[in-house]
Image (cartoon, rainbow, N blue to C red; front, side):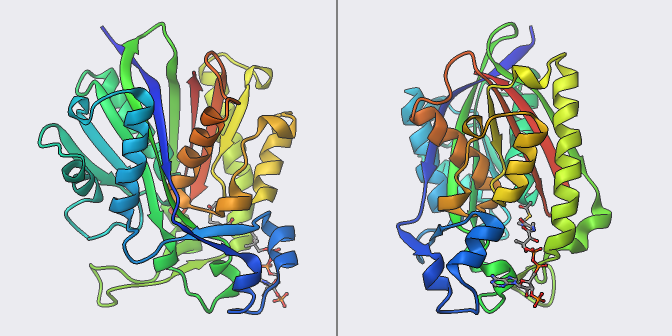
Length: 320
Ligand code: ACO
């Protein structure tokens, strides 16, 4: 019998160090006013040396397990969405597996930049639906501070570090859970947002490079179509959505999506003001916050959407 993936727990980790816009203005020529007006960002958390993707992912995973009241031994699979892994290999996910004391099941990483969480959720849902796994940790964990060019004011003000996790478990097909996921990529946009170095190249490490204007243009159009696709696939309309939990890149992109869906601002979960853009971690961080503070409740319809380097983009509809 096919199963539906139910979200039974959520957890987060944010680095201890909080850096406000004013502090960045001492490093590059920028201002709190410019950053807030163009992006909505007020501050970000930046990782210390010990706060790696695996370290933060493990903490977020523990939070999700505790939230669900499930022991680590029940986990069949761990998926970590990250573009900033601790090592080329082994995967960050197997480091998490070891840190959780697990020697069973399987674990792997998935790279889809800012869309990474939606991609990982989609793969986890497919594993559960096909019966290959029953209980799956889906984690987004990123340390973009390590790949930022701290002399480039056009990018270094936009990102932050952190991790978020959800625990999925197979439930009855007619019950709550992931209704559908929708993934897209178009590699012809690969040079709009990329890192100019990697372990497979001569330049071992690299920096994030971005054409912000072009990304902005693609984001609004592609996210709108991914959202329409998700609603149509489920025979639902905009009025059915209780919560939009978008990738947190930029307040202006988020507001444009909220308006397009006719959602009042209080139905859109926002963390970009405090976390900045944490790439694959941003959606689970925002989701966990809204579940924890009681905004998202059982029975609510939650729409997630993201666009990122690749270009990659996608959406997910979840009945809580
Ligand atoms: N402080 C002050 N001035 C700045 C800064 C800064 N931090 N950054 C850029 N500027 C300057 C530029 O140098 C430029 O000056 P000039 O006119 O003298 O050349 C001016 O501001 C305008 O620059 P633009 O890049 O055209 O500014 P824009 O209004 O497009 O805003 C931004 C830039 C915020 C990056 C915007 O393009 C954007 O939000 N793009 C979306 C990209 C995004 O969110 N990326 C995140 C990753 S992708 C994702 O997650 C979806």
